[in-house]
Image (tube, rainbow over all chains, first blue to last red):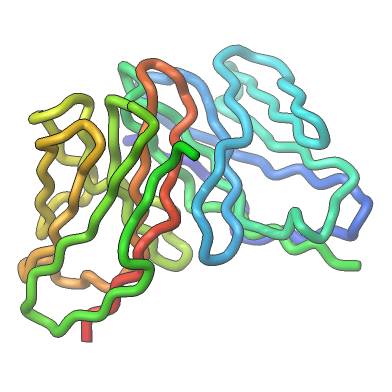
Length: 110
Length: 112
């Protein structure tokens, strides 16, 4: 079957670094995306990894290892506004469908 | 400003009634999607449409119906056959082969 596994909750201190892991199982793999969603809000796209390695966008980085079926989102210099849920997701064939993980709720504390 | 609008933000219905959720986009995207979100469940795909007058079932299509008569509009009807319709419903769109999906603000449906 197809699935993504990520921790349900993570807590980190303001100014610190946090890593949110995502492991997946799928018969066909076309890359891994990350989305951020604040409580009651709409998900917003953060990053996409189509190939192995690290993609950096400001304070956020995303990593993919296809041989390990594993990726992670790295958030640096945490700010209170980073408190949100983070979802990993992968597209199906043709990239039209997305399958989402259940999300990781990040709480940033002072 | 380009974007996706969903209305209303909150919707209440009595059990047994059909209800239609609106989704409009002015991004000129071909593909549109409907997701359902329950606490702790992430986003689950209900239906999606790649082009006008065409749509496909997602993972949880039972009890739902859609239409795609115009490129900018993709309404979702929650029918009385949906056993547990209370949820947060999100509409999204995407351009071609790009990976980013753009989401609307969502409609929170409560069935009493």
